[in-house]
Structure formats: structure tokens, C-alpha cells
Image (tube, rainbow, N blue to C red; front, side, top):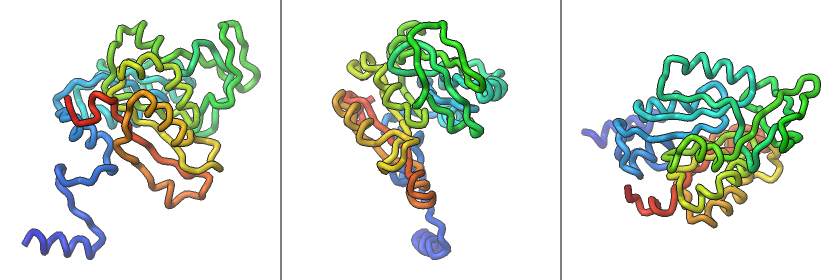
Length: 249
């Protein structure tokens, strides 16, 4: 009877899966729980780099209600909305800064769609005296290693990066942590299309993480690869640190 119901549903365009049988590559947080054997009651430490208005914060808390989250958002308007969204959530710390390969400040033009904000074309300064031109925002930049050191963070369970093409710079600022495999899972937005100048090429992320022993676990949210115009060809990739690559906890 169960097989009959499944065949009927498939004919209707519906595929039915249990939590145990859900294919890898559908739900990245589910795959982390399954691969790492982290239960919903676990208390992972998560860094959300490029938090925007809290979309991933919400997803992380749904998957891990007891998670502690550091949410990085440097742009004024999404930062305001993010703070409103999490103001009653004591386990979420909002950090009004960007992460990059070096400490400093950058003058950046905010985009009309805040999820497209990026430091990719920013004019970065290592000092703190730079002044924004008309329409620009002054963005504080920290390194991942520096922030973790100041915050007393020795290890991170989940590092999510979505910075519209600035992702490798974020990772370069965490080379010390990568060498120690301090970031257990890394979830980063990538592109497989050379013509896409708005996202980070997959091969750059893969090469950098592979040098430190990280292994690719899955590719997610691939709808843009099939339904958007070719220049918008992007998705997300999940990597696991070497000591966890065999599924050990």
C-alpha cells in the first residue's frame, strides 16, 4: 500500500520523503544534522556573514533552537531591520561590520535591493579616517580570525557566507582558523559561470578550502542554475572540516 501511494503521488508530481530518506542537497541544515549527528537540542555556534535582514538567522534557529548566532551586517538599512527582527532573541548577537581579508574601512554604494549589497568593488582603506562620498556608506571591515580572537571564539560549528562575490576575501581573513579546521561546516554562495561577475567562482572557494583539507558535502538552492538567465547562474556549496569529513562528531 505504501509503495502504491508513493507511485500515485509521483504521477501527480509529488515526491514523498522521510527525514532519513531525504536526498542530500535539498536542505543544508538537515544535512548538517544528519552528517554531524547534531540534534535539534544541540547548541551550535554559528556565524552568519552577510546576514541581511535575518533570513538565515531564522533558518538556523528553526533547525537549532538553542543555537548561538553572530550575525554580521554592515549596511545601514538591512542592519536596522535585522536588529528589529532579533531584538528579543538573546542568543543572537548583531555585529555591524563586514568581514574581509584585512581590517579597515571601505566606502560602498548601497544597492536598491539590500540582498545585493557587496564590498566587491569597494575602495578599502586600512585606516579609520576615510570619508564617504555622496550616496556611499562607510563600512567597517574586520577579519574572521581577528573577530574570533576578540570574541573568545575557538571553534565555530556553522560558518555561512553570502557576500555577493566577496566570499573568498572573507575566507582569506580566516586562514588561521582554516588551518586549525576551526570552522566545522562552511556554507558559501558560489557560481559555476564565468560570465557571472556578481558571485564567487566555485573553483576559487573549492581550491582554497581543499588546501586546508575541507571536503565538499553538497550543492544547494540550484534553482537559479535552471530558471534564471545565464548570468545569474549561482547556488550554495556546503563544505566540512577534515576531522569531520568521515562523519565523526
